[in-house]
Image 1: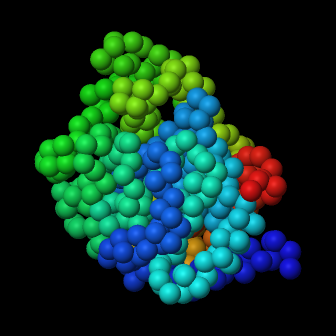
Image 2: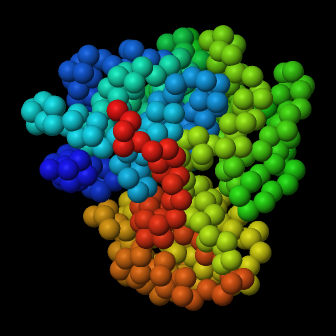
Amino acid sequence: MDTDNRYEQILSYLYEKLPMFSRQGAAALKPNLDNTIKICELLGNPYEQFKSIHIAGTNGKGSTSHMLAAVLQECGYKVGLYTSPHLVDFRERIRVNGKPVSKEWVTNFVDKYTTNIEEIEPSFFETTVGMAFAFFAEEQVDYAVIETGLGGRLDSTNVITPILSVITNISYDHTDLLGNTLAAIASEKAGIIKPKVPVIIGQQHPETERVFFEKSVHAQSTVYYADAMWDLVRTSSTPSLQYYKAVNRAMREMHDLTSDLPGSYQYHNIKTVLSAVDVLKANQGMDIPFAAVQRAMSKVKKLTGLFGRWDVLQDKPLIIADVGHNIAGITEVTNQWKQVDAENKHIVIGFVKDKDIDAVLASLPKDNTYYFCNANIVRALPASELKKRAEAAGLQGDMYTSVADAVSAARNAVAVNDAVLITGSFFIVGEAIEYLNVNNGRLFPTSLENHH
């Protein structure tokens, strides 16, 4: 059997046999780290073989992880990057220097450990965490940037002791699992703060400050606030680039910075990454010249394969995709969308069931044309229900039972000076990108089938 077919079989096994949060929701979560510990012990605790940086937060953790990985890569380090969920291909989750793990490696790993997987009965996420750690150890990475899946305290990734912890921000998401106050959610994220390991807080909020302070005092870890370390001013932008002046507040130095992630919400994430670089230089003695930071920030997509963040998929008519999926994320996206100069605006949108979407729908522009759809997962909110709730919020549009149909309808309806936004969940954006086939090689920045 060829590699591609066997790989597809292995993926089906992982998706169908193992509980998977993105498809099933809360039922897939394991309420402790026991399974992850068992898997890691089976693999020889591979995470002990490399230095790691642990990144949590409600929004921004994916972008922050990719930016930080890009900077370390640009400095010549070999860098593992573990993120979730994937948009188009499972292998996006596990990369070394931007290259996704090979199909052959994934296949061999699962074949080798199938019996153990059946015994331990881990979730899909627990299995992929073990897989990532094993791959990074085998590849002998210098550093691994590890993004949490959900929360922090009980997240499978939390078996590591990193050299730096980062919490990007706290807002409302997964309240059924993490708590329905910002302090409760912060408390779960603060679970990644480890004894004597420095932590960076990306965005401050009065409700969460005390939580982080108390946790860090208890852990004897130093807290750094990105807002206190860097100032950032956007000077200009193009559809695919943002230009900034970055000021290091301690040194009072000003630098030019270009970012190829043009979402205006990246402002906070960039400050967080710059702060992380400062702490790594000071605490780890790492050689990270600012010129390398500047080079890396201008080509994050090329270095790491990131996509789906204010992603300009097409020009004339403009098509933008963004994985914003909660009230804070979508508010940022729609604020920028309102600035887009277009004759008519169209929004392809869909959500998963467990989101508080009424607040999101109320915040969306009323004068756009909507294409309500659902992704091809069990957790998807049916398009018919979304349409009903959207109409109650004063939004007009038709419903489609697939993302492809919705995107196709929007493309047929737009004139050259119109614009289309695709948003609402990772799964909507992933299926839209797959349908449009606009990866342009970004998913696999270099040939990797011979990459073992």
